[in-house]
Length: 73
Image 1 (cartoon, helix red, strand yellow):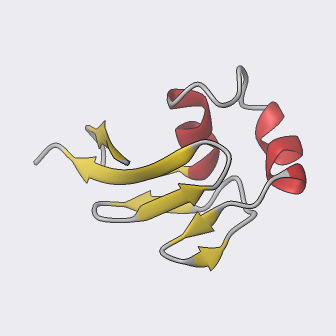
Image 2 (image 1 turned 120 degrees about the vertical axis):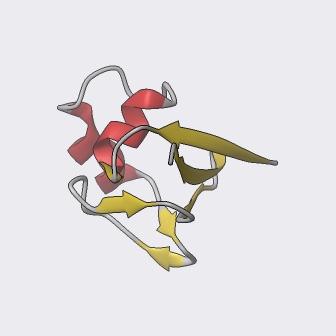
């Protein structure tokens, strides 16, 4: 099941997304999480915590679910 993530800015970073959905507790945990788990952005493997996610991007984290970025505009 896909979960929509509403953001009020143009983009959100992958690290911010992980924190927003409760996968990690602090931003500092993002680098560790991405080194230990596969994360796919639009069906491509992604491991940069600062990667900008824009409206319509789909993030798949096999152990946690699928998320779609939706901007409030």
